[in-house]
Image (tube, rainbow, N blue to C red):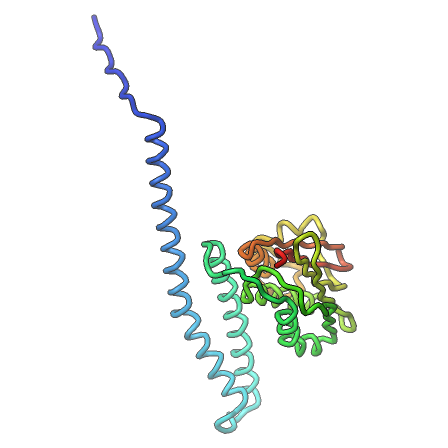
Amino acid sequence: MSFPQPAEAPNWPLEAAREAAAEEAAKMSGKDDFGRRAFLRMVSHELRTPLNSIIGFSDILNQELYGPLGSPQYVEYAGIIRDSGKKLLSLFNNVLDIVRLESGGGLAPMNEPVLPIIEEAIAKLRPQATAGGVTLYNRVADEDLHAWLDPRGLVSCLDHLLRNAIEFSPAGEIVEINARRTDGHVILTVFNRGDAPDQGDVERLMKPFEQGENAENRRHEGAGLGWAVVRLNAEAMGGAFGVVSRKGEALKAIIRLKAA
């Protein structure tokens, strides 16, 4: 019995196949970017707007602006609602930052002075530091120090790093902020003594939602987004972010930017 000979395989050029695969990947990437943008728009409107209303109206109740509520407990409950709303809004904003930065949008580095941004970040968080018995000390005095940065990005970085430093510093300690030019870069550091993770955990803690303590022994609040946001902001400005840590003793957060 004779079997029919199989037809010769078609001569499909390998390059054509590669081009087709690349074209399809580009289409999928475009769809992903469109999905991210749609998510950002939805969350910005459908979640942040009602949260702002909850925070605002609960603050009015907490301060009894339109008259007494009738019981001190109602004032306390209104304050709890307001504070919880603020925490949830902060979480949403951090998630939005990560989505925006991972999709490659939002920052435009330019030649900017460093000192005014540091001073603005310190002034914003000084009341929180004072309430915790922590001193913020700015070692930067060079008004001519410039770097390639986006002010929004650096403000976000400093806000996260200073909040962490304040939270993990015992009362009576000092959080030091410094910046200097070296080898074509501006090195900005935030240093604090106090509770700090093991150096071996630092790389893991750079990822979103990673935390240094397990659920059973957590002593600090937070979703584990701070370092991830800082890292993505630094990279979006053409720089880098790193941490040097001595477990239980001290921590130095380091942002490296291109000097201008």
